[in-house]
Each structure stands twice: as structure tokens, then as C-alpha cells.
Amino acid sequence: MQENNLTTVTEFFILGFQTSYHLRIFLFCLFFIIYCVTISGNLLIIALVSTSKILHSPLYFFISQLSISDILVISDIVPNLLNLLMNNGGTITVSECITQFYFFCASEGFECFLLAVMSYDRYVAICNPLRYSSIMTNGYCLILSITCWVYGFSITLIYISKMTDLIFCGSNTIDYLFCDILVLLELSCSDIFIIQLEMYVLAILTVIIPTSFIVVSYIYIVWSVLNISSSTGRQKAFSTCSSHLTVVSIFYWTMFSVYVVPTKDQSSTISKVLSLLYTVFTPFINPIIYSLRNKDIKKAVQDTLHKRLIW
Image 1 (tube, helix red, strand yellow):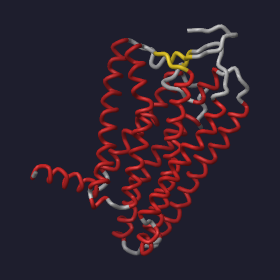
Image 2 (tube, rainbow, N blue to C red; image 1 turned 120 degrees about the horizontal axis):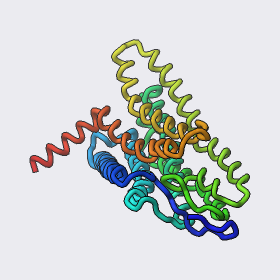
Image 3 (cartoon, one colour; image 1 turned 180 degrees about the vertical axis):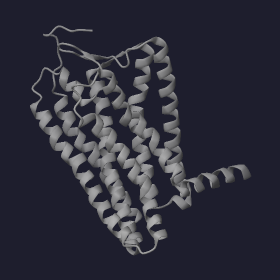
Image 4 (cartoon, rainbow, N blue to C red; image 1 turned 30 degrees about the horizontal axis):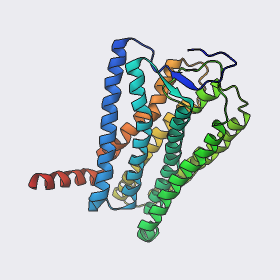
């Protein structure tokens, strides 16, 4: 799948996993099951938060927003990945490729902001418990959520406005699982200095600042918890943050493993596997973390099942 150097590329051929037929069928079944479980799990959380009165609180409202983001991320990547596995690769137009990257990047950017907002929610709940209900009102939570969505999808437009001007020539083969910024820049014949500069600036806005905010929030949280005289009170306070901390750790660990850790010495297969960590594994594990480690969600599920059985 090679193009002449003087010919502008209008579509890419994404390789996906170039392996035996039987292994590709196994991977297809595996990712299909993960996709179905992820969609079902996140939709269940959204439905429970919307219908169960015990989950009508700021924390669970933000969890439902996280579920929406997870659905967007995995739906943007996995259906096309399943097609690549069935056909041992596949073509995608340049505009479709940039569109896929936009929704992926926008959803990930939203999640960065949302995790910072969730850390602020935990900070208010633990450090200012008496003022929690007056600060984290329904209206304020809605404003915070809308702001995260707007920031995530609008900041990514800065990328897209420049990427649409890129010219692709030479090879049109993408040895990856989806359209990511790094592989697209490698195939571009245009000057990519401005886009690379934007990458660093936007990384500060969407990753560094939210991460710093989360760290500072938890410094105050830990300090407040350590000042609680009762060991039972300390344990209860920490338990309210455990799920959020787990999600934050998984999200940033998988992201940094791909974009921060040097990848020059990594094989393409390792890079593809690492990319699955934040595109497939993270959306899959998030609802499991919140359902297994949260008594309120367990109770909401039990109450819902009990009402169904009675009905």
C-alpha cells in the first residue's frame, strides 16, 4: 500500500494486528465481549444514577459523566478495530481518520478535566463537610460538568484546525490500531513544528494543570484525614476517595506509558498493546471499580432488582 511521493494521500490503510487468522478471531471475540460489557456496565451506572434516589449526589453525577466519556472513547476505537481484525487491516479516508482522532482526543481531554473536578468534590466533602451541600449544589455541578465538556471538545479543535491543513504523501500505511496524532505526524509531508508546539501547550492545559490540581487536592485531603482523631473516621474518609484514586491512577498510568515513556526502542506490537490500555482497558475497568468498591451502587442495583422481581 504505497503511494508515489508526488501523490497526495486521500486514504490510509490501517494494519491493526498483523497475525494469524485464528489469533485475530480470538482477539475479535475478546474485544467484542469487552466492548459489550463496557457499554452495558457504563449504561447501567448512568441508568442507576438517573433513577435511584440514593445516588442523587454530586459524586455519582460526576461518575455518570465519566461513564458517558468511557462509552465515547471505546465506541470511537473498538468497532473499527473489530473491522480491522476481521479483514486483516482496512482503509479509512483522511477526513474519517482526523474525525476519529478528534472524538478520541476530546473525550480524553474531558476526562482529564472531570477527574480534577471529582478531586475537588472529594476535597470539599472531606475538608469542608459542613459546607458541602451549599457548595456542591445541583446547578454548580451541572456548570462544572458542562465546562469540562466544552473545554475538552473545544481545546481539541485547535489540533484539528491545523491537522486539516496537513498534506500526506508517500506511504499511506498506518502500523497502528487507530488514528493517533503521533502516527499521523510521521506520515505528513508538511511542516509539523506548529502542531508539535501546540501539543506541548495543550498538554500543559489538559494534563499537567489538572494533574497538579488533583495532587494538591489530595494533599489537603490527606492532611485533613490525618487530623481526624477517630481511626474509624479516618478509614471512612479514605474509603470515599479510594475509587476515585484508583481511576485516576489507572488513567494517568496508561496515558503516560504511551505518550511520556520513550517508545523508540519499542516494537510496533508493544506500542499497540500499550494503546489498548487507555482506549479499551480503562473504559472497561472504570465501571467495575465503582460497582465493586461502592456500597451505594451495590444497594441501588439490589433495590432495582428487588423492585423488578416484585413487579
